[in-house]
Image 1 (cartoon, rainbow, N blue to C red):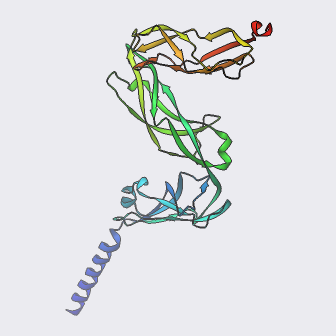
Image 2: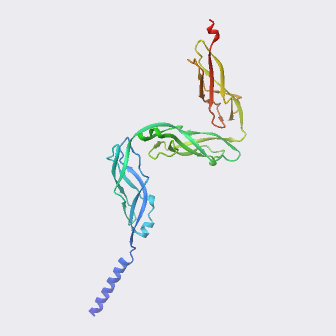
Length: 304
């Protein structure tokens, strides 16, 4: 009888061990590329080669790893001891709750180079893609705000070309007021500068859109400010282009440039000037007005 109970107990123990270990899914490892953020960055410094993602090793049952979303894992680098120049800084990664997973960074530290920051103000350049809807005419756009503040490494100061917002003309419609767009700082090769930050990071773009044919050609006249010094006169004036296409409020047949100063001018000069557009009007395409003024000695003054 004792042998029976002893055998029964052994059978139960074997069953329990099989249930505990035999049913467990084996542990595996999987390498993931996860987002990286900085912590405790000293003011006035910026890492110039910070990667967007780093490798971590996830260890656990396959069914748990399959439930893990890569973007739910965040690696951080502690820069509390950062100084200008290069340095090695500790990496950490946190395990999301609710999963039986162990996470470790592939490398315990990260080598980074840091530089002093400079703050610049730049206008927003609107880059267009695509074509406007059929029957509509695009005549430019305005960004709000029109200029932004960017913080960049001092090593990139001479490389900034534009702060750019992209306007997709395919998305335009006649009733559209504003489109929001992200800003990107690009260098002379039209490549993004990854270490640059912009404030604000997004702008509102107001596209100037009207029906095709709702425009007319108007003449451009220069507007003067002040007078030439005694003994000099204007010999000739050349305006290029002499006409522009105006849409919207197209009542006037002539529009004027912004004032061109004649004060102190004793030699021929050329200036690029903007136009004073009537309220509610717009140019059908961006146009630069060039005004050349021939300045000559006044023959009447010489005979006095």
